[in-house]
Amino acid sequence: MSEFKITTDGIEEFMADLLEFGELGEANLGAATKRTTGEAYRMIVDATPGSQKREWDMRFPEKMVGEVSTNSKIMHFLEYGTGLYTEAADGKRAKYKIAPRFAKALAFQGSGGKAYQVASRLDGRAVYRSKAGNMTVDKRRAANLVVRNYVMHPGIKPVRMVRNNLARMGQAYDEHLQAALDATVKGERLGP
Image (tube, rainbow, N blue to C red; front, side):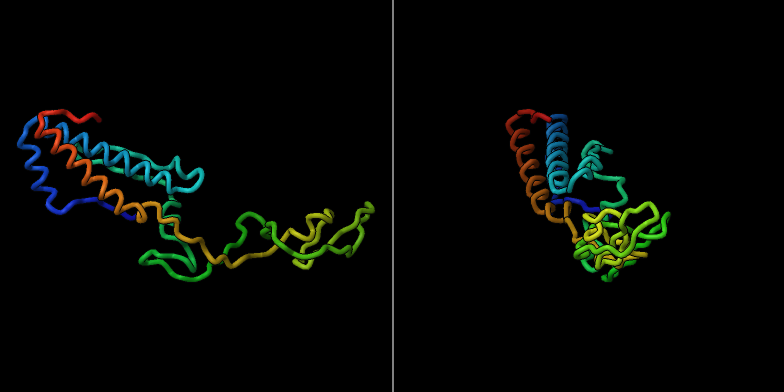
């Protein structure tokens, strides 16, 4: 997945000023980093669909650095979309072929039209065919079951879990840094 970083213009000078207050400034800067990272984590998880929410992690590799990351292989595709809808810089805007890997055909529910009987099996059960071209002994499913050797998939639209929240994350970062500075100047310690 692509890497996104939230920074503020003049952050180095701001951090240096805050660190001049010694241990209190450092503690409050660390608290601001944790608050911002936690808020970014919640924004991203809230924007992530379904069971993929569990795939995000939050960690602090350095004293003043927070990270929200994932090892999920599909997050890049969710963020940027695929096929005709891709927004990835190196993405190819085209349908792509999906073919079975372990079977002879793909089968999925679709709208195949009305089923009609085409034959009878030796055991006396009727065999039905739908306009979609499949054959089955279940008349109700015959109209909806689609069987194909492959399909050309149009792709999925991007979810933009991270990119849609970057401005809000930056604003939260500015607010938490200001709170850290205000507390430090007053001689107070921010909570985690």
